[in-house]
Image (cartoon, rainbow, N blue to C red; front, side, top):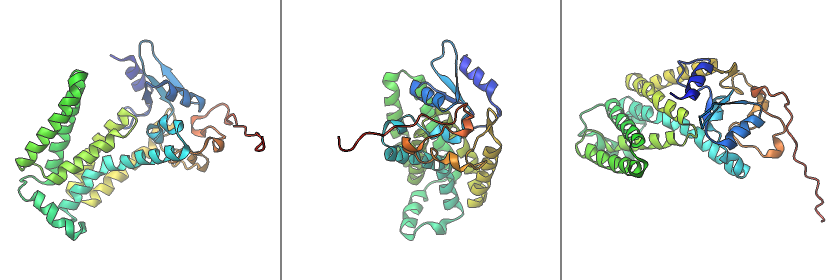
Length: 288
C-alpha cells in the first residue's frame, strides 16, 4: 500500500468528497513552484510523488508549462484546460437532454443527420452514453494493466474495432460516439489524474439528471456541485478561493497567467509568512 495515499486520506478535510483536496505530483518543478508560493509539500520515504497543500480548485488546472512559455501562451492553454472541465463534465448530459427533451434547439440542417443516426438504435440516449462510457473505462483500465509495449496498441485498435462494430450493430449512434470521444479527450487535458477521474465520475449524475429532467436536471446537478465546492476546504482553506470568498487580489494568476512583473505578491490563500515576492529589476540603459 502506498504511504502517500494513506497520508493524503488522513489530511483531507472531506474524505467522501469526489474532489481531491491535496495535489499529488511527481514533478520537482511543480513542487518548487508551490513552495515558493508559501504552500507545503509532504514527502514520504520510498515514494516518488509529493503531496502539496493547501490547494484550491484552480491549482489542478495550472501546469509548470504555463510558466515555461510566454504569458500569452500560458494563459491560452490554461483557459483551454478550464474549458475542458465543463466539456468533460456536461457534454454527454447536454446531448442527452437535447435529444430527449429539447429537440427543437437543434438547427434544422442537423435534425435529419441526428435523426438518421438514431433511427435504428433501440436504446434511449442515456443507455447509449452509459455503454460507451463503461467501454471507455474498460479500455483505459486494460491499457494500464498491460505491458507498455502493447498497451497503446490495444487502446487504439480496441477503440476502433469496438466502436465500429457497435455502430454497425445499431447499438450506439454515430453522434454518441463523437460526444463520448470529445468528452474523453477533454478529461485527459487536465494536468491532474485525480481531477480527471473526478470529472468522469461527475458525468454520471449529470447524465442521469439530463435523462430525467432535461436541462433543468443539468442545472440542478450543477447547483449541487457548486454548493459542495463552496463549503469544501483544503487544510482549512476554501476550495473556491478567490471566488468564494471573493478576493480580487487573488485573480491575477487564476484564469490568466499574468506576466512575472505583475506578480509581486504570493497568493494570500496559501497564508505565506512573506507576501512580497522578490521583484524583477529592469534598470538597464536603452542607449547601451
